[in-house]
Length: 113
Image (tube, rainbow, N blue to C red; front, side):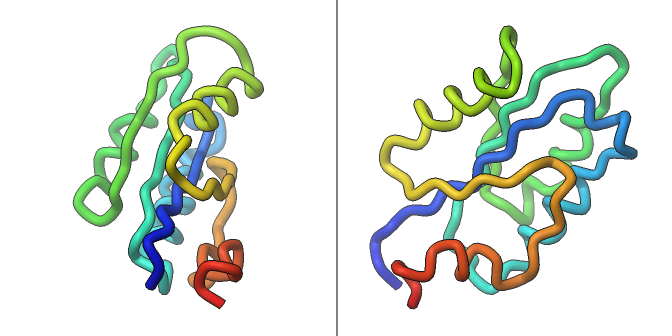
């Protein structure tokens, strides 16, 4: 494997409206064929949302970092991901996606190809 560092960025807001679909996203990431990656979740809090509790359930299976987004919308979450990921190759997904087990490898084919 090369020395390339991969960051999977996931913005999330009010995921409770979607039955905490982020759990399925994180489960799919935990089952990737590539294991050497970092997950950055940009979380914008909302009332009565337990998304952070769901994320905590995966901290022993994934290298997860959570950044809190206090202001703005989707574009601000993207700015936080890009500012944080200066030393990484960035791969983005959403909090309701279920990537296949080879998704990270396919998204980074130049690195792993």
